[in-house]
Structure formats: C-alpha cells, structure tokens
Image (cartoon, rainbow, N blue to C red):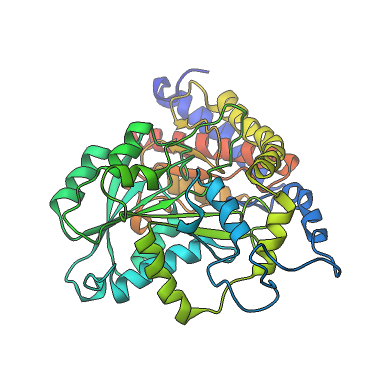
Length: 428
C-alpha cells in the first residue's frame, strides 16, 4: 500500500470508511487488555516459584557474618546480598553497596527527599534554595519525573540520541547553572526507547564539571541484566569511571531484582562512593532497623552468584523475546512504508517506543482504550506529562500472553491507521 501522505483526499476518505468499520468490529470483541506498564507475565512469575523452597523450616538462617537473619542487625544488608548486587551492577566494591527491600523506586524517592530536606554531604538543603532543577532525558521514565515534580523541582527536558542523552546540552546546563542539582539516567535499555548509552557518553558523564558541588547523577541501572539476545550490550561501570575522572562522589546508582524474581518481593540496591554511603547509612539508622534479610538470604541461596542470575535471565529472555518480535512483526507488516509511524527495536529492557505522526499520540491511546486496550498515557514519557509533539507512545509487550498480545497489537496498528487518516484529512 502507498504511503498515506501520497493518497488523494478521495483515497483517504475511502480508507477512513474501511478503518472505521474495522474499529467498530474490534470494539465488539469486548477486549479488556492492559499494556500500560512493563510488568512480568505469569509465565515469568511461575518460573521463579521454586525460590520459595530455598528456606524451609530446618534451614540455617545465619548469613556469612553469623547473624541470624530473622533478628535485628545488618541494617545495610547481608554481605552475600551486597556481593550479588555489586557483581550484577558491574563489579562495584561490595562495601559501596546498601541492600534494601523490593523497590529501587522507593530508594530513589528517599534519596531525592533527603537531598531536599538535608542537603548533600553538608550542602544547603535543596528546600532552602530559591531554585532547584533536574535534567530529564526524554522520552524517559514517568516515575522519575513524578518524584521530581512532587518535590517542586523544575524539570528540563534533554533530548535522547542513539548514543544516550544529548551530552552537549547536559554539559552546558551542568557546568553553567548551579541550580542544576541532578539528572535522571537509565543507562542500559532506556525506558522506553531501549537505548544503551555509548562508552563515550558514560565517560562524558563521569567527567562532568558541575557548577553545583551537590550535583548528582541518578543512575537507574534497572535493566543491567535484562538482555533479550545473547549478544549483550554493555556499559562502563559508572562509579569507577567517576573516580578515574576525579568525581568519586558525583553518582548515586540504583538497581533491583524486582523483574528478576517477584516485582513485589525482590531486593533492591543503592551504590555510591564511601562518603555517600556513610551519609546514607546515618539517615537509615534513624529510619529503619533494617530490611528483610530473610528475603536477601533467600535470593542469594537461590542464585548463588551473578552467573546464576544471568542463567536465570536467559530463561526470561526466552519468554520475552518472542513477545517483542511478535509486536515488531505486526508493526512492520501493518505500518511499514505507510509513513505514519516509527518504532525502536530494543535489544533488552521492557518496552518498545513508538513515534506516531505529530499530534496523534493522545488520540491513538484514547482509541485503544475505547476498544478495550489500556496503554501508558500519551505524554507520560516526558516531564509534566507533556510531550511537545504529542507523538511518543510506550508499548509494554511483557505482561499479556501470546493470544492477548496479538489482539492488542492488531488493535494498536488499527488505531494508528485510523487516527493518522483523520489527521491527514484534517490537513487537506
């Protein structure tokens, strides 16, 4: 079929009639599908159920330090869990790691909150400053933006490139404006585009020269082992790069096993320089007696080491790869050559990023919802929920089963076609 922009008004009107009939038929199917978030599917969750058998009523509950994990102690996590998470994050020294509960998001929230109320390593608390700004690579992770917006931090959009954030802009803002206190980063298989930062980008981050002494890189390494293919994409380890560049305290790193085992019952980790870790532990000592050490022990005994983690993730990839390829196949078949959309081909992570014609994303998502498929809200991948082009849509293929995914993908491309035709007719 010819590209939609090459069609005459009469051809577009005829195509619109066909698509509207198809859409009414789709609505009549009574679909109730959710592609709004990157959740593991049932098969992934079932695959990990045997982790519950690792600790039985006769298990030795002591960790390497000899501490009974059922009791108080080891506020910053058991040693085995620190080593497991440090290896997963690229070989960070275990003493630079704190192990928390299931959510890295809660660690990020707490870290921003602490900077706002108490400052960074003795600096002025951000709440006492006239202006605090964060750089936000976009399209990006909506929950990052929700945190900074909640605390009244001004967000500045940084365009993404195939190499990562536009580093010329990042360097300019960071070096010239002392009100810029942080930047959100998902360095491997970024949410939602699936972009992995180049080595040069990572090293430029490490070599930043901030105008603010309390500037921090919030390095959300959520997908460090979430590869879909054997040929993995790797990035330099950011903490060691910062140390080599003379900026040892400039980064906070976050990661978790939430999409490795159970999203509601994994373990998460924070990694930073010795100074940052010690400061964090001072606040933790007031906030908590410690996190779930039994769950930490369970994870360590289940995986044993980082090689066990990677072997487990190859099983995840075998489940997820066909789902991604199925959606991409539908996009290629139904939209290829029509000139009404572009999409990424991620090698890992949890999302496909779709770029519709400008001004169409909200209408496409609304049409999908009308016919029973819930997508991530259009605009969510930008600060303040405002996509300046109204074009980006995040597709999450992981949760539905294969039958549901096929139905959702078919409906999505139908909605893209219909909304695009309507837009082009409005322009005639």
